[in-house]
Image (cartoon, rainbow, N blue to C red; front, side, top):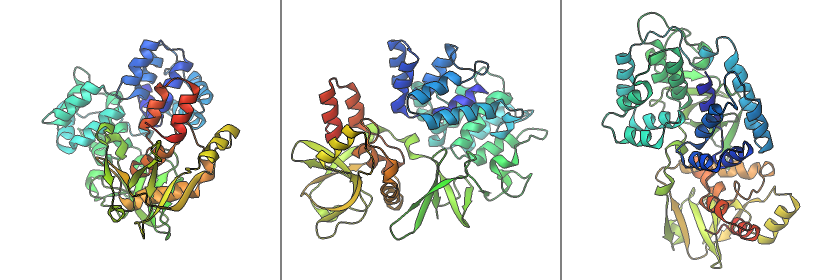
Length: 433
């Protein structure tokens, strides 16, 4: 059960905060380095805390929640507390997708994973479960990735309620509900899967026998959503306020056969892009002709040969004017806001001159322009809620959030390694590398 708690919390745990939480518990420097260098730092940290007896099924998570509060992760503290209490309730193995009286055999489970999961889905499930980087590479390079995933998870392990339940949770957390239900429904005898977890209609039937399943709330059970709209009011997608899952309007439901009914319209689950993003494959291309830029582009502008600034293009360029959403480029405004502690309301939407040359950031995978632009508009509309942060909310994290749904900042990671308050402040404010 506690493994399921760890993977649920790790999915919400910002990687940028892992080092701070590890420091709160005074973990040895060598252990902290090992955690930060792992493929899934959040899972590694939680596992280390469990191994040290700081958290656990019997110990509880009070110390962890206190650490989250101390590290300004109050929302995550609430999630951790609620998730742990939920998992301790009788019957919780069913509530989040576990199975009762598992009858599925090894060969049947192996066949389902081998035949039903695509390579990328296998990698996403493995990442969610906190498997090592070497395991991820072996799955990716294997001729039959589903078979390799099974081998890693169940080699020498009995097939039982606990480990199969964790796999089901991982599948459903990634939106792979059809495969999860095939596992729950497989084997002789009747398995029970709580209707409220994944079904809103045709009670008692399985996903495998339905063309699609329609939910009235998110797969995490969240019922509140942020609406991502374009300037013309077109609703592009909705984002769960609890787990940040994205549901796309008008997408093709065939892949995972799961829909969300929201305000009378259907939205389809999209696996988070950042789960599959390799940061090393992000590149820049120089653009000197403004007409080559397109709405939804993540652009980088060099300011007077001194520093780089990132922005999202929310409309095609017209008459050499770029319509962008970005953190303000007013140096004095940034300094004044940071110094006073009033870091809010400095996200701007404005038209600026094409400077003659910009760099366009190229991602190996990225969201559609409508969704990118809708995210930018939402950030602007809710700008009073966002604070400018040295390491988490700068111009680059805004742009990457719009492109893939999660903010990354290569320059902020470099900033963490720099020494000296002046150097750190300058590199953050300017966005230099």
